[in-house]
Image (cartoon, rainbow over all chains, first blue to last red; front, top):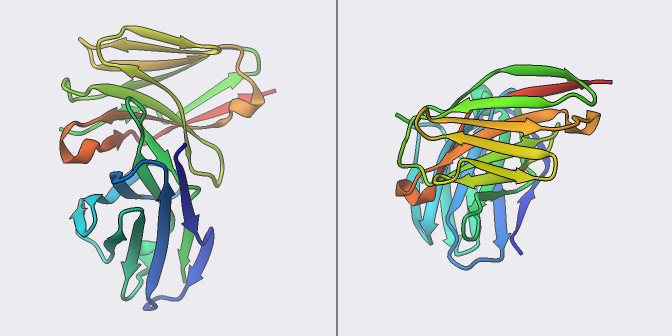
Length: 112
Length: 112
C-alpha cells in the first residue's frame, strides 16, 4: 500500500526565517511526487513535481524551492519566508494503475 | 487550457441526494477523479472514472461523465452529516508526469 508521511503537522514561523518541510513515501518505487499549496481552505495550486531523483519541475515562480535527494524523499524549502507563504502544504505521490494521487496529511504553515 | 471549474457551495438536508458538478477543458484527459477533504485533513480519493465510461456507481456514490460536454458530476445518495466536506474534481494529464489538475472545490454542507 502507499503511505505518505509529512511533518510537521503545524508550523508557525516568523517572516524572513528559513523553511524545510519533508515528505517521505512508501510503496511504489520511483514515484512521481508533488507539492501542492492550498490557501484559505480552497483550491489546490501545484507548486513542484518530480519524476525522479534530482529532477524538479516548478509550476509557478515563487519564493520556494524543492529538492529530491532520495527516491522516496521530497523536500520543500525556503531561505526567507514571506507572509504570503502561509497556507496548507500537501505532498502527493502518483497512485498505482488508474488511481489518482495519494496525499499526505498536510502541513499548516503560518508565517507571522 | 487547464481550467477545471466547480460550483462554490452546496447545502442539502440530511437524507436528501447531493449533486456536485464539474466541468473540465481537456478532452484528452484519461481519468477523472473526485476527492474529499475534511477540515484540517489531506485529500481522500473517493472515486474515479475512466474517460470511456459514462457512469460509475459505488455504494452511495454515482459518477456521471458527459465527455461531449466535458461535464462530470458526483451524486451522493442519502447524504449524511459526515459527508460535509470540500469535494474536489480533478482531471489527469498524461503529460507533465501524469499530474492532476484540480478544481477549486465545492463546499458541501449537510443540515440535520
